[in-house]
Length: 405
Image (cartoon, rainbow, N blue to C red; front, side, top):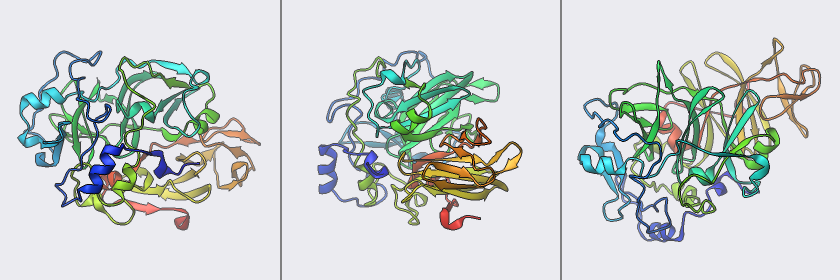
């Protein structure tokens, strides 16, 4: 079984050789990165994204919450790879919108038809009611953004390959429903999205608008999980799966970002990052689950040596974190069912509550015992490399089994 670091397996011989030759000389050094195409092939999707509006408002840079010179456009040109926003021409900004094409009309297939997925492939899983959807990372590597309406909710499936950050947001903002595209820019080496309606720029991991008229607004995080395909399929055998029929010609069997974890842990970032992202409490590519309640932000490692349940209190609320290295995932729950606060322990069969002896699965559903059929409330979390989480939440606290209450 692969470890979480091995999930990002081969970034491409071209990148590995380049990084081996050129050492990073400071925070403004940009490591050469492959395009989402095969190595060396030019970006050519700018004008061919289906369902993209013909006119997108020009970004208003007079309103911003972060320094404009710290937002870098990836030009996909090895001789001039990173261009700061305050130096980018309107023509360059317009040309790079959706150079990595988002999916606006995704197609799905049943889990039983997804025989092209391997058990250990990672997916972003989203479920509501009796419905569930899986978004394979091997597809998201090439698209990063999916806009859809699932279970009556307009959702944004977002994934930044440089951060291993799989996060699902609601696209509702007050009375508006936003549609998202890709700027081809990065802030703290994390994807910067844009909304087509206002032209504002959004920092992916915190889900926060950082440039434009919506600056300061935040998207609502929806409960989701990053998990192996085997683990998701066991929880949701009737899940729908994002189809490879995307309308784009991509080799979805190729993973161009994978040994990037090892490169990160050597302190070499693809694009410039600030001091907070270099927080040494964990290695840059440590995979963590972040939870924020009532302004209190905490993280838990997703690389435990064995399955475990962490009981904690965050923002004044009791939480239970299920950590399962076999499925390479974790999830956070409000541990209350049938009006009772539950206490869990992990057994060979899985999590069991000590109150009734009921058996639970990783989705927070009781599958056996007196509470069978009960469902814990899953809490919205972010899963990402450590550097991206701590860049967004510099004061975040690291928690784990040693910190159980």
